[in-house]
Image (cartoon, rainbow, N blue to C red):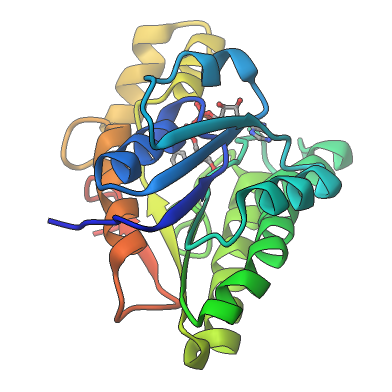
Length: 243
Ligand code: NAD
């Protein structure tokens, strides 16, 4: 069993889905967890635990990130989970959607990593976990241009940070899920008009014949939060999608 006693964890997009499950898993493992999200009502619905603290944080706002990390102090574990899925091919994509995807899916991670790294370097210890996707440099997925480009960039930034700080006690890894049952996936399935058909199509692309759960992805996040001999890796956890 992985224990994180004495560690401080900072999780973005912890209000629902994978971020929520990971924040709870880190807390269960004994870490002091700072669960942040742009949506305060989701944070208010998290279980009340002594070692689970919540704060509203918009990861598009660099000053807010800096202030948040100042309040937290030294961060041992950073889980960059915030991200958004745009649909559409290169011809269908609006430039404004691409700008937004880059800002939320990539720049936000640059902001948080810049904010926590000095503290981690002073301690010569730190685990950074970035949320990518198998829809990235691992796999081209139809109708996911902005998403695929930005999630590929997450793998690049993960490897780059890992390479720069591998001798300084910093591990930086990426998680690349397949299709995970989360509130935003529910929204995407509903938005397609025929929910049952959309759900069947998402399940059909998962060779294991089902969607993943946020808790299954949180188990990998917990592993990477405690892992000491891996860095710069993109971990696929995808129900067999990329076999
Ligand atoms: P979700 O999409 O259901 O929830 C996202 C959360 O992010 C919400 O709580 C929302 O309030 C928060 N958020 C949105 N904008 C924010 C901002 N500017 N600042 C802070 N928080 C913000 O959760 P999910 O589906 O578990 O996705 C989490 C991550 O996992 C994303 O990066 C997503 O791309 C990635 N991912 C998801 C799947 C999937 O199938 N669900 C697959 C691969 C990767």
